[in-house]
Length: 390
Length: 187
Picture 1: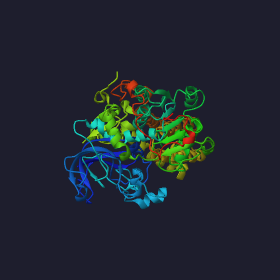
Picture 2: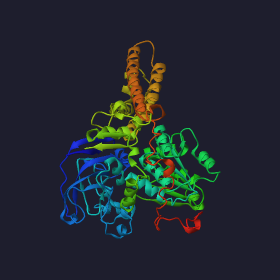
Picture 3: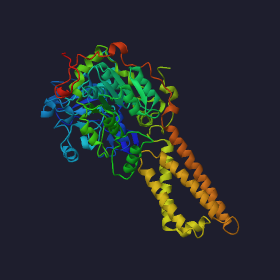
Picture 4: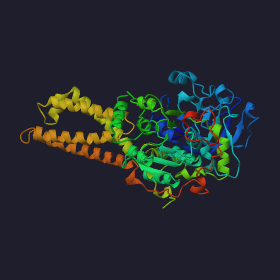
């Protein structure tokens, strides 16, 4: 089959690789009908996430049709089922899964010794996201093996387009969880840093959840225009002071809720801390660039909440923890517990509350995936979200 | 313009079927060239300074060698080589100025001086082309082609969307502390 394969820093190719096979009785194989490039794939593309190996198949936003089912998954899946595959692989039975904390499933990461060394305890296995998260083949391919398939799937009905459903795999529940973690009140101003795909979903989720005001922060005009479309007020951080504007919009008090939908590759040209991060990163003394985290801690209203769906990989520096502590801020983080939200979000799509396909700007055949990684990374051609068709 | 058709305008920023553009490849080549030239300047400063018509300037050549090695390593290890390629352009300017003012205009060294300036002009042109291409490949205000102000994502409109999901109950393990809640739904 054809698949997008990581060969090294900024080197992705569309290769012919062996078809996946059932390896365990709980596995299933799906024929991929649509997959997408996620913003967090760019961290792999740029090689910020360790433990990637040349030959790894990328992709964790995938949907398709079940074509083969292992014996132990047959009670939940059958050939022909239409499924969206959540990016977190879950066993469905461990203590964390039972609590709904699916992204920290205790069983699905087959390299849990690596994760435990890096993080203290293991986190869930992920599709196509380094050997730290299990080294599982990803779904930017014609076929995907789904481990723990009896739990790791979202059954979706026929009659709704792939484009409306595909993002149940990651960015829609990720943006939703980011907003839910803010525990939004009708009096809240919610500021969202980053208007990429997750930021766009977080903006819409905050609006659906009833925030008084949503403020979107970015520098790319087309991304800001997409945020405006949902009813957000926008700040271009290249031309305006984020802190001054946010304070002005909140009678000097700062936003109650702040969402970091940027993560470890923050682009903040011209600020002292950005130059500091670049220099430390070049000397390999810091892995991530946490400009957004610093800014959120500084501007957030005392007793407010920070929600961090943006991916961080390792070590960050010069975090104003004194401000965080003295202002009594709550910080909520984590990969997304996709299956915790999927039924509710599928209902909202079916009821027409939201149509997540708004975010798709490019639909291309799988073979053009390598080029689209670069187009997406460099924010060329108005690119916000790429869907690939195998 | 609302919707846009990317197939009509998609720029060829990458090689077909690959994730790297021509400019990315050229940048990597320049990084390797930097390291090679820098090592030569560090290890054989006398030979390099003689070849450039800069006899007696071994110290300067050695310092430039350190600069070349550092820039080359930065290009090869960086996630975005653009600023480092612009750094090479600045280095080229320094090199040209050094040869212009440091090498003899007359006498037996002139031919070597002129040849060095010609080589430096060629390398500078390549660095400039690469830096300009890399900069152009980045999206931004100048490259914006689309306006998505019609893409709300709310089929019922933005007004209907506000608070449409207030039937959602935040799970107990995610709710903020009661003492910090400014407003109560049950009030």
